[in-house]
Length: 401
Image 1 (cartoon, one colour):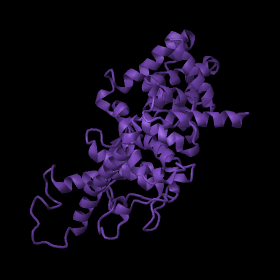
Image 2 (cartoon, one colour; image 1 turned 135 degrees about the vertical axis):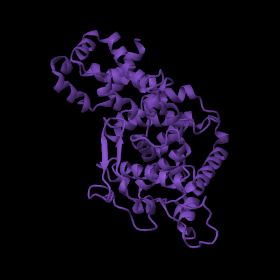
Image 3 (cartoon, one colour; image 1 turned 90 degrees about the horizontal axis):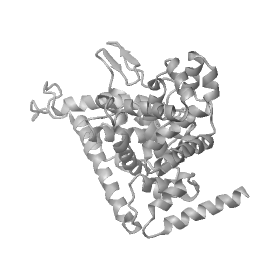
Image 4 (cartoon, one colour; image 1 turned 60 degrees about the vertical axis):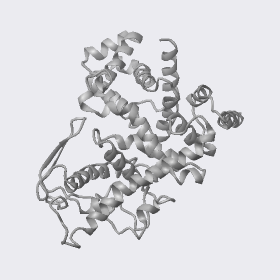
């Protein structure tokens, strides 16, 4: 019975995706209740829902070719060419101008930017090595390493070499958005490969985490206003995983470029959550966190009063829920299932607020019975793992609002 239902669902998706001009409303309704993985259906639907592929199927081939060529150009301009310049540094001293010199004090000099990029790269590297440590996938080699990057004709300083050679020499104190302070002292070498993190594969191979690192580095270079903020790795991870595990090789061969553009599109809707100066604006994260409590107040006044009375502020737990699109609260397959609904809902991030509100209401009895310590533990390590129950409750809240 379950198998027959599953086959019927797959057939419904195939029909919707076979239209020359895809009906977005129909596709959204189908996707909201979960997208099948079989036949690469989920990966294809996400590309449409994240506005990477147009609704007109006749344009797909030309759009994909253009976008993938653009991404190759990004790799050349932002990784290969600067790496060649760095590799050639010191080989010839004849024509080195002050502008070309690494010690040029001008903050806009090419080398100053190169070294600044290395700081961002180190942060990305540290984060992507910890991406889903309970899964072997990101440590495994990709079947499609980037030939442009691995081309032996390109003798240049790769991102891998840049990470290996960069150490944090000056004392730096970095405070990330959640208030954690990282201190590195002068003279201490940067421990690149702690035993519990990912090792680098031999030359000629690339692990999936290295591909994710490259995507985030290119994004940071193209978006200097936001660059890289810790947590972006948790958003790009599920998209890349979905595309790189697509059973159709003609799609998963291009998982890197396709992920980059889908991630960029998603971040264009979600990036305000990562910009500290916008925190208190109507599009910033503070407003969204307070909106979860406003929704709760309308739907469960008793629970709202209990959290207020215990001084449990929304930022204590909804900051992570909202900025990382719940990617830290559930296992990856469940995160992907939540994102099926999130991406297919027209009011994408409004629905996320409803999901957060549903999560609170579903554990109301525990919260009403608990003290501050118990409740904080519940909210920071959410006890319900059945995402179907959570999504059904969120849909109920949406329909009854």
